[in-house]
Length: 442
Image 1 (cartoon, rainbow, N blue to C red):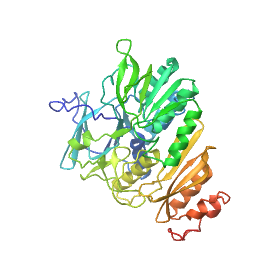
Image 2 (cartoon, rainbow, N blue to C red):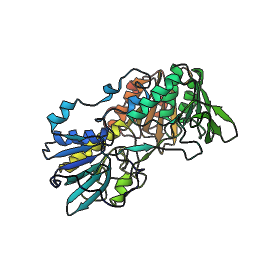
Image 3 (cartoon, one colour):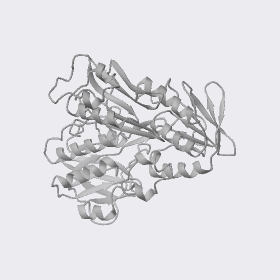
Image 4 (cartoon, helix red, strand yellow):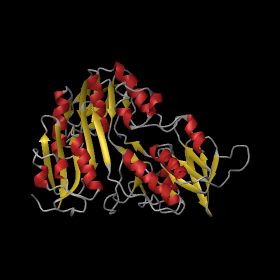
C-alpha cells in the first residue's frame, strides 16, 4: 500500500521505456481487503474495462485480522493468509501489480496518471483509493530501537512471531484490540507480559466500562500485568541498539526484551491530500464511496464516511465488514447503480479464549444493560439511546450477538427491561418485524 510517510520527490519520476500509458479503465491503489473487494464487485457488476490493482507490499491481497490471532499463535502459515489463488486474478481479468508504491497522482480532463517509486507511469480513467491505515508511532526517545515493534502487515507479524519465540519479558504499549490479542498470544507461550495503557481502562474507545473491567480481570487471571492511566515516556537501551526497558511517566522502567506498540492507527491520506481531496481524519466519502472529486472513489480504513446506520456525521471504521461494504458501494456507484443496503457494522476480537463480538455502533448511547455473568466471562452489554437498541458487546455469548445483529439489521429493538432478564433468551425477546424501534420499557 502507498506510504503516507514518504515525502513527495522534487518532480515526477521518469517514465519507463515503452509505449505511453493507456488512460482507460480503473486503477485501484491499495491491495487491501477493500481493494480486492472493489475489483471483484466491479467484475460481478459486469464491468469489463481494464482493471489494475496496485499494492506496495510484495504479496497478493491477504487477510489481516489473523495476524494478531491465529498467525501469531502459530496456527497459520503466511501462505494461508492469501484471499485468492494467483489463477483467480487471471480468470477475473484483474491485473495485480505488487511491490509498487504509488508516489503521485494527477488528474486532467477525465484522465489520470499515477507514478510509482520505481518509475512506472500508470494511466487510468477512474481511480479508487483503498490505502488503509498506518500504525500510530510513539514520538519518544528510543522508539527506533531494535525490539520495539508494531503490528499492521504481514512482515510485521512475521517479525513479531519470530521475536516472540526468544523473548522472555514482553511489554505491550496500548490496551486496545491489537495489544490485548498480542498479550494473549504471548501469555499462551508463557512469556512475562505487561500491558501499559495510557487511558483509564482497556479498549476504552470501543467497549463499555463493564467490558473493560472484565477484560482487565480476565487478562490478570491469565498471568498478565495491566497498568492503566500510565504514560510511556521512552524506551531504554541495553545492548547497543536493542531495547531493554520501557520508561514510564512515574520514573519506573519496566524490563523488556520485546515491545509491541499497539497505539492505534491513522488513516493514510497523503496521496488524497496531494490530489486535493477533502480529508478529515480520513478521506471524506459519501455513502457511495465518492470523494470530493469526480472520478475518484475511496473505501476501507482510510475513509471517513457517514454513519452507516443513521447517515449522519462522519465516522472512520476499521473492520473487515466496513471495508467490504464500502468497496461494494463504491463499485455500484462506478457502474451507475444505487449502493447496496447499508449493513449493521460488526467487529470481533479473539483474545485467546475470550471471544468478543460487537454488533452496531455504541456512540451516543445514554444507557447500558449488562446481561449475564461478567466474572464468569460469559456476558453481554447492550447499548441504548432513548430506549432504542444501538449496539451490543458480547463476550463468549454468540447467541446474544446474533440476535442483536439481526434486530439492528431489521430496524428492531429489544426493551431494556427484557434484555436485563437473563432467564429470557434474547431470541424470544426479539419483536416481530415492523415493531417500532423505540418500545416502551418493560
